[in-house]
Amino acid sequence: FDPYCRLCPRLATFLDETKEKYPDYHCGPGEPFGDKECNLLIVGLAPGMHGANATGRPFTGDYAGVLLYQTLFDLGLSNQPEAVRRQDGLALRNCRLTNAVKCLPPQNKPVGAEINTCNQFLAREIEAMPSPTVVLALGVIAHNAVLKALGLKLSTAKFAHGAVHEIEANLTLVDTYHCSRYNTNTRRLTEEMFVEVVTRAKELAEA
Ligand code: URA
Image (cartoon, rainbow, N blue to C red):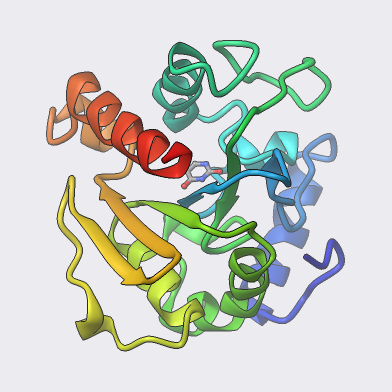
C-alpha cells in the first residue's frame, strides 16, 4: 500500500479537485483495514465520495458500509455494528477489508487501466494473507480484480452471487453482489442474501 500513490493520472487529478472542494476529506488512497492475522479478505470496489474517500477507511461513512459492517458485527467479526469515522474504536476480528481500487473514481467507476494499475497492491495484500485464504469479492469488478491479482485468466472462475470457487489448494474465492445502495434498494441484493454469503465465507475461513 502506498499512501502517496499517484500512478493513475485521472484519479490523482480527481482527488486533487475533490480535496479543494472538501478540504477535510481524506482524498487519498484508502488503506486496507482490519485484522492482519486472519484468513478472510473482503474486497470491495473503490472508495465512495462522501464515505471512504472522506474518512480514509474502507466502507466507513459509506451507505454500502451500513449492511456490510452490521453483518460483520452480527457474525462476530467486529466489535461495533457501525462505521462512521476512522477513530470510532471499530476493530475487525478474523477479517480484513480492502478495495480493488484504492482511490475515489469519478462516478464510482474506475476504468480498466486504473483497475489494472492498482492491481499490484491487491496482489500483495492477497499474498500477505495467512494460508488458507478465503477472499470474498463484493461484485464482479472485485471478483475479476482478484483473479487478475492471482495471475489467473478471467475464464478461471465466472462471477455468480453465492458462488464458491476453489481457486488453489489454499485459496477460495467467494462471490456476492456488491452491497451498494443501488443493489440493496432494487433488492437485487437483500439483507438475507448478503448475510448468507458472508456467513459461508466466514465458515470457510474458519474451517
Ligand atoms: N466504499 C468502499 O470503500 N468500497 C466500496 O466498494 C464501496 C464503498
